[in-house]
Length: 582
Image (cartoon, rainbow, N blue to C red; front, side):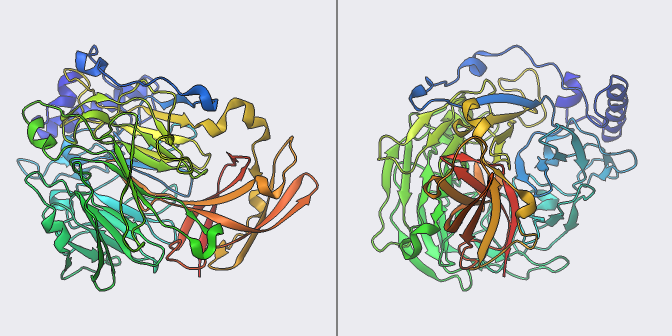
């Protein structure tokens, strides 16, 4: 088994024959059809055991807990997105060779890089993962999605851009249906987008920014059309150093429709319609924040209850010294950055406000939770992104409470026991738990003879707000009462919920809506949480009718499907999927 999954020089036709035979063996042994057995992992090395686990901060009560959802997702989830039909989409790259999932018989993929030409690749490099049952459905990707980008359109379709080699200018579509598969549109983009960032705009279009040797942005064309040229962004060229450190730039849509763009250690606000730079923000000193330094970033929750006093802040945490990748080639792994910086990009004279994490983090994920708190999870305390370029996996998640004063915002939660560094991912689920997957620090699917075996296990992390003692009174949205036509911008939106075993008063309530992101390389593109204004609240026997004011315009909440949560005394319901539209 070891040689089969680590030797990418195996003759392509022989490789296909071996995978077909293994799939047959797995079927006989009772495993899910199409999934290969996970090879035995080698004994833990010293590097594997050198991990960071912080003491759990129990002062706030329940600190979360972990469960393993699946021992084998079929692919290692380099890219992850939650679809509105109740499935997660996970995919990696064709470059790492055979995965642990097989395409259906007769549906193999032509390998455009095979030597000699004409070989077929029968591995699935993408799967649809049922996070309730662990079931896996293989999906067929034709071109290489390595280090690509994505976002959801107004109908909930995943629109995915770029990748590597033959995939670098491709646009791909995946519909939210249980029988759908990828549709691909080659040569759609003007510039190759490898390590680019995709952002949805108020009009529902997408802008894709940057990528390796792509110092530009362009709008993603509709299916079947292609772009003739892209628009240069001088900042991207100016921030490219000898190891780049400006790939997967942080891109956030601000409430006025402008774009905040951060690359390496510099940032601007610009108008995506004409490329005009509206302001340049102060440099964020201390190191690099973008790939391969790979820090974290999020637009902090937009509290619409504040009205005209709405504040849009950006948070950037962690990263690595600028030379981390260069010294990583010499097997040296400098400490990751500990600092966390906040800024309001639209504020005149804006400056970075600094804070410190309990430990430095690189390659971690940053997720906004339904409460408005942020979860920092996965990653390492030393090194940077790259195959075998990091050490000391950080197993302890941090909860970041933006309402607390500086120096008191971080809480150490219950730790996982599975290291997840390079190419790991995570996502908020509709039940308010967190899906955690992926992690492949190797140039192939390697399970032995390496410090950190390829990770195909999938975990669920239950945050503190779902403490066992709170579940009996957890609020529940009456899904049947949610208007089927969704919510309209600026209109009232009413539905009902229940909260067993406790009385509910209006001050106990909060309603939030969350835009599901596309997550890869520690960055959740298009992630967005809005706190809605409650305009009416009425008890109705065992239930309550609540009316909220929908976001006024699509610069606040681009059109599409959101997870809507009701929170009672800080405990979130399961989400209802709601479409916002004109």
